[in-house]
Structures are given as C-alpha cells and as structure tokens.
Length: 302
Image (cartoon, rainbow, N blue to C red; front, side, top):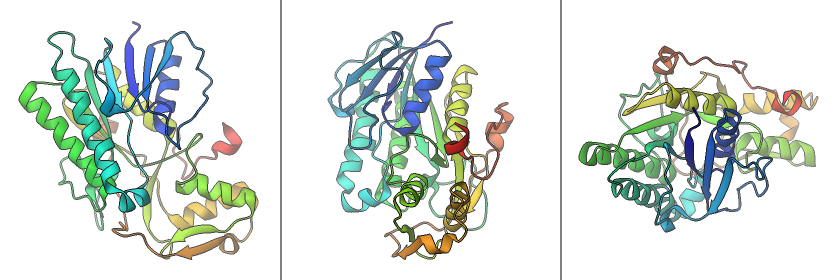
C-alpha cells in the first residue's frame, strides 16, 4: 500500500536518508525544510514525482497537507551552537514541535501519526550502566534540554488530546551527507585537507556510533510494524572513544600514526563523558542490525 509521509527536516543528514528509504519503498513524501547552512541543497530525488519540497520554518507552517505519518527530523543539533545561542534551539526544537502538534490537534478527522526524532543525549552523562527507555531524562546542555522538552510536550499532547506518537532516541549517527561540524565528517575533511583534527579534552569520551542507514531502517521498521505511543532507543552498541574513531578513520586513508593528525582542544561546557543506551526493546521488536562493525567504511563501500 502506498503511504503518504510528511518529513520535516528532510534536507538534513538523517532526514534525507529517511526520505531515500521511504521513496525506495514506493511511498509519497512531502518534505518541509527551511533550508539552513547545513542542508543538502541538491538531492538525487528532487525530480522524483513521488517527492515534493516545501521550504518553510516549522514555526511558520499554518496548514498540514493530508498524510499518514508526520516524521519530525527538523532540529538545530550542533551542541556547540546551543551553548552560544540557546534560544535558537528552543525556538526550533521546542516551539516548532508545539506548532506541529497544534496543527495536528486542530484536525477533527484523519490526524497523521506523529513521530518525534530525539537523541540519546536526553539521558545525559551515563557513567556506569545502559540506559533503557524508562530511565529518567537528565540533559546536560541546551541542545539536549530542548529535545527532552519536546519529548515531554509530545507525551502531554498524547495524554491530553489523544495524539498518537512514536519517539525514537538514537545514538551518534554517521554516514554520507553529514555536515562537517560533526566529528566523523570533520575527521575526514581534516585528513583530506591536511589540517589537524580537533579533539575535545583527552579524547576519552565514549559515544555509541550508529550508521545512519541502520537508524532510518529502524524508524521505518517501527512505523510499518505499527508500534505507537511508546519510546525506542536506537543503537548498535558500537561504543568507541573519540580517539578510537580518529584511529579507525585514519586507517581508511592509510595514515599510520593518527597521533600526528590530532590536536587537543578545551572541553565544551556541559561535556558528557559517556553515552550508553540499551537496544533490547528494539531488538525484541524484530529489528536487525545491518552494519554491525565498529565503524562502517562508507567512503569505500557506499
């Protein structure tokens, strides 16, 4: 059956991969994106008759076209920017979500199913254990706080107005089309251009690295399988320190001594040392990991 998706933030990194997946499955997509500095200006499916683009900020939307699913990827996501300009993140990541929920609430019939794309950063610093979906949210910076606040809003609109939802909290995504302010593309760009790779602190911070196609496959699987009014962590449990990530990508480019390529820079404010989330609930939902390696070499293989 051909379904209709509204995808917000579909010109961004993860959103564009989700649209690619949905179009390959034969569905219709309306992409709502305000087009920012980190958006993909041109994509292979721009002329696909099943795809259309509306260039608009979430806060400026006054009407939602009819659809089956509304999947919200739109967000300001660079933590460093949230520290210097927190109000920008509140407007995009919280106010924008509220506007979408209000538009859904105004529909008497045929409300779309709402999907909020969140992050493992809402749990905050996880020192000693794996976080499950039931753990308390404890964000450490304005970015993660804005995403946690949006989740609370989604839950409130479900309990108050009966708006069905799904929330996904994914770990650190990487892959093609990611803007270079993030660690993996920053490493690649630095190696290509002979620049030092900036590493916060001593490089020992642990992140759970998730190939973007595994993430969007999981989201699509959960939607098509009918899960609703619940939260899922999305993770492959690929835990690596930032230095281990640098070392692995240096191998892709035949760099023998990764230490010659890095420079240590001061920690950012509110720096979390470790993210660890449990994916048991997702695996129990019959999702299968396709890219289980520590860091998938998408430069060579995609």
